[in-house]
Length: 197
Image 1: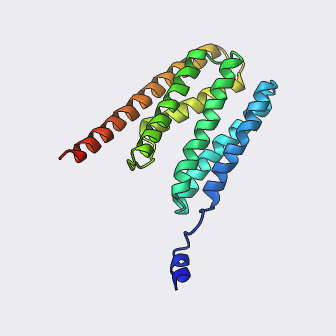
Image 2: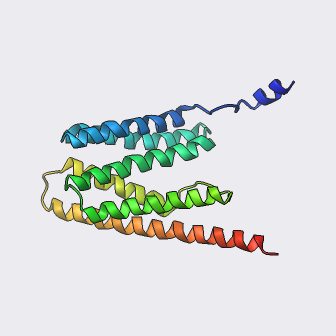
Image 3: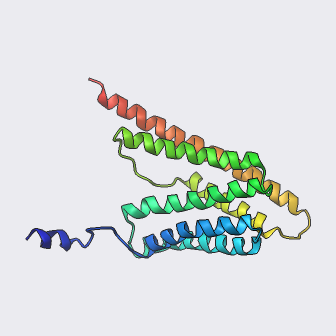
């Protein structure tokens, strides 16, 4: 009887569906992307990054359209994004293709978010992992910057476009980081208020 009841929901065990598989593939593409960058195979690195970016769009669409949103997916998707984008900015900064300060800003925001999640987990504070609008815009700006740098188009005033993307990405990344910090502080204050006698 117990087995029948647990299987009735169809959600026992690890939920493997198309969106989650796409997120896992994106994570597995990261080492390949990094290797191509280090080997100066920029066209192949661009191809891998483009595939990963498309898979990011697809897994979100499929999760909504097929109603396949899962708790595992809510963790896998941002982890895959962070691994790919952080790796890209670190390597591109090392090979002098993007400014070092931009990579520091991107990494600092991700460290801040990760630190917040860890602290909430330690304190047993439940939080819903849902990207804000400014966070989504930040991801789009970061992806656009990396794609433009890897494409390195031979167009008039390309440097103006490149530096505009740098500053846009930096501004959105800082804004997003401050936004998450504000949300985190509110959650902590509410938790402290609830614990008062």
